Length: 160
Image (cartoon, rainbow, N blue to C red; front, side):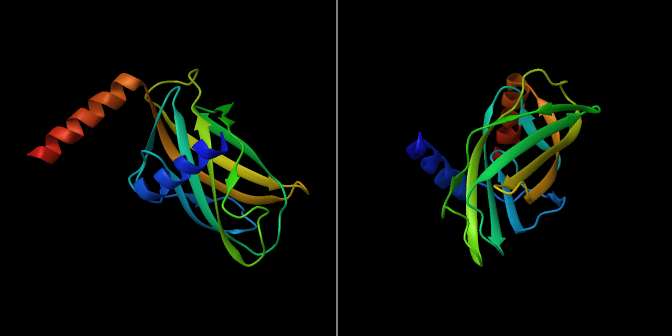
């Protein structure tokens, strides 16, 4: 499983650009959030039921030995916790005065309203329950068919 996450990390880094995000109280200096399939254009389209690689890059001013995720997607004032695989650090533990990177796989819940906008809020806590990273991204839900149609339309317009 670790090998798969490392390969996903390399793929995400080479095929993504940072999304527009709002820092919601990070103790570390959050530098970039890369969500597979999202670029700099908002909202970030998320597909119900998909496993989405998410990479964050940050500068740590102090050490943390363990990191725990709390991920919530808020659509129409309904908060749905989102399952996330354990983080993979480039350098574990997170070291002081160093640039760090972490990639996780987020599973988008299937029980959310379709074609709705809301916010993905991702919070990371260290072993002392201190919030070290927090960001929010504007998202919009879609199903697999809508994703395929959007990809098809984007391919058609790029070929003309």
